[in-house]
Image (cartoon, rainbow, N blue to C red; front, side, top):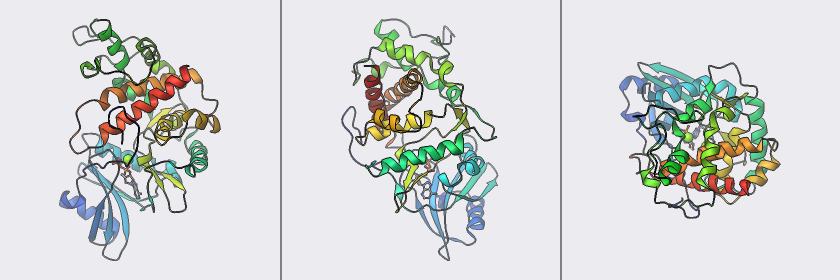
Length: 342
Ligand SMILES: Nc1ncnc2c1ncn2[C@@H]1O[C@H](COP(=O)(O)OP(=O)(O)O)[C@@H](O)[C@H]1O
Ligand SMILES: [Mg+2]
């Protein structure tokens, strides 16, 4: 776990999750229908960064399901529904979808329970398996299967603008596109510049000029909106399960997004860097070695800005590990970007 800008060690913290046992009666009954028996036991998932139900439930006769459930409205039920829509495309890269249900506003997905655990630290043995997994991911996601997708770059746009805002602050200027000016930032950034007061006295852990970060970030939309692939969007070790055989599986398919095919791997590599692996070497060894270098830099700058800004915001109740994960991602994304810009 990264504490501020320090080196990384340790385990993934846990979301404080609501329990199926506390969900509305009709939701619990729907799960019992899927399980084929009353729920005899519930074990909430140990990892992840969503405060919604994700539990392994056990039936009276020992049958087991991994249940995700949430109401539509705040994005969590939508995420469960997207997982149902994506199950076929994900295939055996992920857990198989055993069944699903809609109960009022609630969406319920029942998956097979995968053996093993989410990765806490990427080992040397994981590397060839991961590179193989990324090749299989490409087979499943390029071209994007016929699904109601939108560009990931659009969804990320509201989270951009950290570097432009810090640059303005460093020059003593008003940030671009503040509410009273109602202007979008150049390059299609967010209409309202993000608040960065909590960062203005914090030193970046790398030696990359703000001008350069802001310039890269400003190219986000034009660079990353086109894309031929289905984009997972949350590839990190808490969403990869290492089975007892060592095989890796990707869980938590919750976005109906398209993006350049290499983007999921590039997103994942700072997470490997946090376990001591060199992201550039891994990119070069992967099926995406030819990812356009300038575009990769744009992606890294955009993510790093979000992670740097949000990682230093106050903790989120029920998601105690979120900020430290973001700081870790920010640190390793920035370090990799610095190496690439040298
Ligand atoms: N099918 C499954 N079988 C066993 N464990 C799972 C399964 N799917 C996910 N998990 C575990 O549960 C955690 C939370 O599930 P996930 O789908 O990632 O939800 P969240 O959106 O809350 O992160 C994951 O980090 C993973 O460790
Ligand atoms: Mg997850």
